[in-house]
Image (cartoon, rainbow, N blue to C red):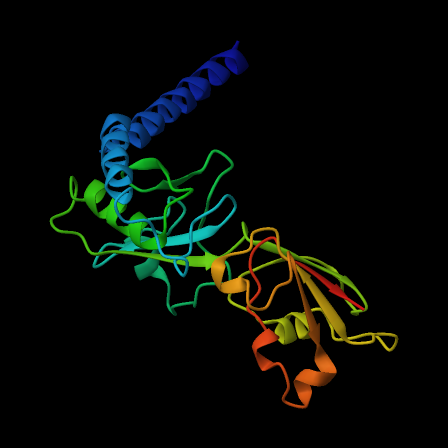
Length: 241
């Protein structure tokens, strides 16, 4: 009988705490889904008159982003509270790739506003979007968004390098850097590189024949055809002979 009483007692305590926590979590979200959709629709409508430039990074699935507000700190749902930060004796630098991942539904979760859609936005558009949402909570917030790690842009390296494979394009890289990142040439390599690119833009046509570019490394190190040491794009296939 005593065991039954204790079980019921602790179950009631646990259930009450769980309900209270859930209610607190829901109440912490101050922006409605209708508000988010309205702001995003307005932004995308304005974008039709001014498309992002080719140099602007477009957020994709799996990317890891950091979001912070001046004087408020990190807005990641897993970020430590001010109390936790003050309790630390020494400040630890953020680890590589720290931040909030973009989920497979194209959203990330942030403090006070919950899940927001981000896939397809540039980092600048994302910051503007969040500024408008957080303006319902903070007075004129200064929002900073950063790409901590790119996971959505990838390229493929095949052939006579020591470490071929599929790699994340985390920052701009040229062909020579790609070879270095792949461990360098094997002893059997002729050091001729073929780049296969699916989408050929106007600026590519001077160097590409159809969808391929041929890069001769031996010519390059003698100072010839330096312009063929191109910057790799997402989905490029690099074949090393």
